[in-house]
Length: 522
Image (cartoon, rainbow, N blue to C red; front, side, top):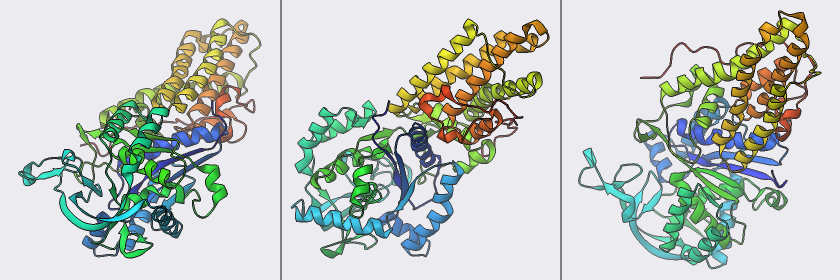
């Protein structure tokens, strides 16, 4: 379904003030599944992630820990953020840090160009600032505090008091882009998704945009404003530019032209930065706006958004150490409608692991391989004559490939997995109905047994290809046991039903072993 153009996908770059929790990993896995699918479809694909290391929040955290901001960032990136990518099998092509020279140099280049074009001016600003969000807050963004903060206004996201700041700053003429942004949203309804996020942002911009303060003087941990080194660049203005500095802006024009624009996967709480400030910045610079901004929902634990500041974060390895990375990836991509909030519970994870992965998919694969070894010494028989049930399964393979690919194009990852799971369920039902263990007892039924197991193993191979972007470890093991030709990640996913095997299978260990206990559950 792709038009053949490059697929450049990004996650947000994450603050290094603390270690990652499963909310961060959820975003990483979603972008990874999309990147793996497009790569396997043959689309030129580039997947970027990274870390946001400037700003007051990082400075305060580092100071509290008795180190410099750069030392703190280096430590967290090396011990927490980059290891996360291995823990959950992320296949990123690049990892950008906002302290990279390639980023800092070209942020200054971008800013200078906007200044020269007249989009930046000096002015005084007073407002309520949330250090947690690194954002000035409007009155509507504040709520009454509770507990120790009763009687004061707090940030609605972080539930902590805001600070009244007054500074002489540089401002970006964002108000000039109110109508151009509204025109963009109207002409390209898919630019912001899902619909709930789009509606909120359109309503926000319709109220009229104010100019944006883009520098700070009260601290010095950031990129210097190129024409005035007494100011550092506002952390969001700096961070958003990672998407183009990593792609070659200012350093490799040919590469930038090849990769840009990108699809941004972000949490809905930062969609406004990406769908308002960011395209306005790009318009001012005469650059293309992003291809799309998708603001997914929050992960809820006990009905509350996961948060480091509220100590409700769960470390990804608390799950992967018990269930494995594939189960982590499958659970969060299938159990939650991508774009909506979703609740996490250990009980639901455990139940889905057993029912869907161990019993549904894993047991199906093991049974088919075991029967081929038992009845045919591992040889995959030829299906000379196919019955209606066999033909129906082959047709279903084609349908689920098309349905899953169409869902991926909509970024509906959960729907793509749901489409593929139709084949899991049908294959399990098919084997139950055809009873190959009974056919094996009668020599006269040998041709039928050959057709049934040939049909079943073909369907299992198609499943391996289709599920490889979601559960890469298990499907690689299955692919090896099936005698799949080549690397599974190189099998064209939009033609998964045309996969090729060597003609023999080998023994398959359980893909999803029984889990006796749930580590980390309280």
